[in-house]
Amino acid sequence: MSKLVELEKDEYEDFVINHKTKSHFLQSYEWGEFSKEKKNLYPYYLGLIDDNKKIVAATLLLKKSLPLGLCYFYAPRGFVIDFSNQELVLDMTRKIKEFCKQKKAIFFKIDPDIIKNKTNYLGENINSSKEANQIFSYLKSIGYRHLGFTKNFETSQPRYTFRIDLTSDLDTIVSHFSKTTRKRIEKAKKLGVEVSIGCEKDLDTFYQLMTLTENRKDFVSYSKDYYQKQYEIFSKKNMAVLFLGKVNTKKIIKQYNEELKNIDKQLQDIDKSNLSRNAKNKLKDLTSQQEFLEKEIKIYKQAQKEYGDIICLNAHMIIIYGNKAWVLYAGNHNILTESYANYATYFEHIKYCKENNIEIYDQFGTIGDLSKDNPRLGLHEFKKKFGGDYIEFLGEFDYVLKPFFYFVFQKLVPFYRNMILNKSKKELKNEVNRNQ
Image (cartoon, rainbow, N blue to C red; front, side, top):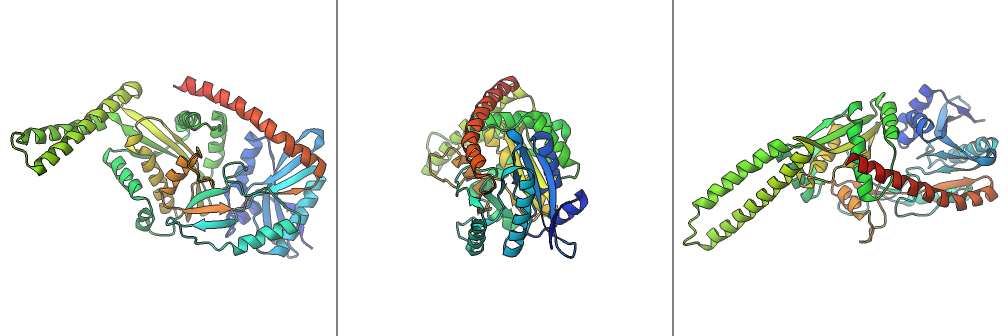
């Protein structure tokens, strides 16, 4: 007879990080400890042990305490289990149900990264949804309540993402980038954009860029202390890597001035008294380049005056766990965007992951609603340019244990979240104003 037990750190991590299909940083021991520190959630590291005393499934189960001694549980991207093994899934579900009932839980939630649909960079469907549909039907048949095929960011974790397969060679990976993306990366290189790996002292810069990004895109994220604690916990095991994209305004201005001087010389050499068609076209082209460079020099001089010679435009944090990496946060300045430092920064984390034998690079979230009026469409189109597979997951499932309290919970939570969101937006606006 199998039994559900609390696992020690080493045995839990050994099973989860080495699981062939369901290893995920949101099921890591570190995520549990971080959730305890900063999310007011209590972690349980549980394993299903078979008759041979072997771990056959595991999960991080996060407890959220509620009034009246009640609570609910969440297994982020869990369980770590072979979901195609129905007997095993049923056994795990029953054991988790018993565990949660003992804790007076209203429900427990899972949102496994089971792929419902996958299309490649050409828009071709490359994933059969047959197995996912079978898992979906089975989960519902044993008592799980599906929360719908949401299209935006309504769920605890993104239901859509882009993933890049890093097992191909780098040239093949880059060939899947859009033509525009490749050109922009080349321009960033030409301008001398420098991407480096940061450390704890760079978290101030990272946070400033995150607040600017959040204010610009009208979403609310986290406090500075939240990011610091997350980096502290994950970097201890080299799981968090901070990338900084910088420009040197002094060098760029010098470079543009040299280009401008060369164009001025070419313009002087053109005999304007008797222009052929080719000469006219050349004159037009050179004049256009001259105007562009003069405009860019003016922009960079203004940025230099306000921010100095070296400006950090991008600060991105990626999380590495097992054979996968996730772009968890991307803070970007709203100036000098035509340096394309953001593109160069993304390219550098892709190369870094490739060089460190990461097999899957996940951009951690996009949308399913691709209508033109969706304010998140720009984010989607940007991530799409890097040629990853467009992934749709099955979504969230709740297993209800106390129907009445679950009904009340479902009604009150949206109201509470909106109240917290409005408060956070006000605090964010004040923080942005302080950083400017």
